[in-house]
Length: 355
Image (cartoon, rainbow, N blue to C red; front, side, top):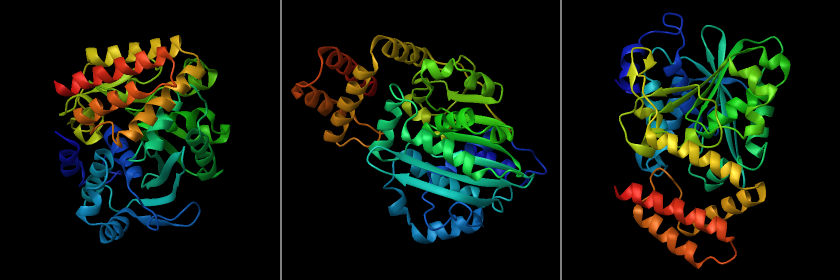
């Protein structure tokens, strides 16, 4: 059963009839990918029903517009269309919309009011902008990055002193932002958090993972990853994953609409050997290189991606990877260590895609 099947089965029940669950968490986290500019009111400027937001969005955007987006955004939009048809979601209030984009930052967030007087705070994952992907890698050598600062500020700003309790979550980078915001928010805000969800989001540096702030939030935190997780294996994370099944393979499992559902929860899975290897390789990389080398690696990698016109790591083609290897060979102002590491990484990626 997929998330779409879940909407058919559970869509007829309100949250008062069937309580909030981990599948609802993923559905609401995916809303943050939708461009709600001039649809959902900004912070402290009112709210709009989900059904009405859907009507306005699809009046502004046709299929041709939607299909220009990368796969995660495109699928989130089509999921949103179906969500708006259900009794469970259509009358939920959406509010506090924020989106910021600059040369080195991509940040988006919104709030959803549930009828049991709780709020779901959703952080956007990485969209089609290369700056968002680059920020994912900056997490390896810099803390906090700008989107993490914005996530903390946002959570503090949208949580009233005498307001309802809340869930905090996000997909991909949004999951990392949800975790960091919960770790570093004000104490009065933290007390209102029921649970934090990272839906296949990257982890943290070891320094942050071993901190008292992480220990404080850990008993309220769930990290959901598919069996062949890649993004969720980036950086360090505790071994308390909620591993689930997907109907896709490899990097395509990152797309949450591929995750398989059993009644009101995801189907249990087992972390694949490839994901375990990625995790171990990332930890070795983090331990081997100092922050300057990690920064050089990131700047070089994304310089290559931009030259090769790669906007989506999930939809990347073998021809693009081949082109990236050619660009790398021509680069001279890069250390031998990082050049060797990049060459190995791209060759492994090329081999995976050919298979």
